[in-house]
Image (cartoon, rainbow, N blue to C red; front, side, top):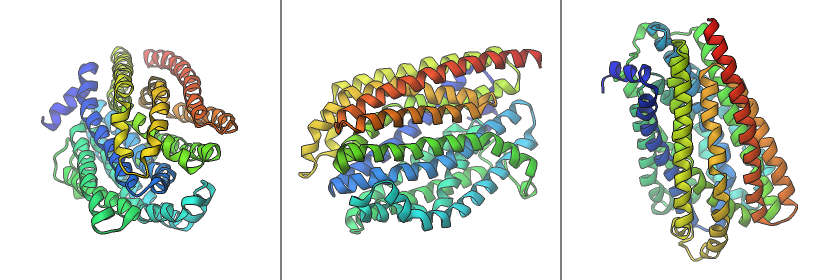
Length: 451
């Protein structure tokens, strides 16, 4: 599909636009999450301590990925809004400013991560697995800038309706990592550090591919030498749209680290191994909602830029039906094949004993999937209509609710009560998010009619 046709799809029927953008994003996210699953599977062969170390560090890595992705989502909203308004030069400038901002953020964060790493791991309760956690996290701390740039470039491509190209980046990263993982972990004998080295090499390959797409004029907005330069107005617009999303990811994944700490208080590092493995599998099954939420941002943003209320509302309603419906269907997969799905994490002799507890926890914890799925879709809508601060606010409230319920559950020293706390917390969070989104949608309609 040519770049002009991709833009035509973006500005056309919202159902077709969401499907066209969500399917490749969904495939990419599935591959990316499968990549995480494979990471855990390979590390499980080294024992429960290695899996616990991955669980401790993963929220920190996700924060870094989220900062790049959040900046990319902000860029996607701004770029698609300019395209919808017919301002191609401003959209091109937005691409350049996104790259500059991503590089600057990454360079600032690198020394901060390296200096604070021991303290972060200690605070997160990783004392029992401190050596494994440090080895796994060190490589990520060195190459923060690559992680941020990779997410930002994906957002630039999505903003132009070129979601297939951003998908190609994600698939390339995941497939490369899946291939490199066993080589660095076992063949080169680098253990858990080999897993993070493989991830960063795969990220570099993905980043180079994204740069080729942009500079090779494979997109609607080609970047030339005359476009390169600092534009404070455009940078401010991107940060205004992207910072709340970045903050949301920071809060979301930062509080995941706090929740992991609560699990350790409740059931020790063995409990964290069981919980994080089950939760990782469940997150894989919520990918459709996350993909639809990401696809909704440029589609609804373009409708907002055109001041088309009908297309804006239609895109949001269809996103809810599609995202929640697919996730609900995937609950059945987890309920029908729990042992088969969990086998890849418990194939080694020292992990087999954990399988019954994992199966039982999975059987009821998966009920939080549809509740969680409202959040990325509602957040996508709020981002599109220039109210990203509300999604950040709700992310904070939702996670504070979860922490409260997790703390109560941790006093029982029963890991299954953590699962119950997760379901109740997400129900409360979903209810609040839906009420807020409904209120903001009514306000947005009135605002657009008066414009």
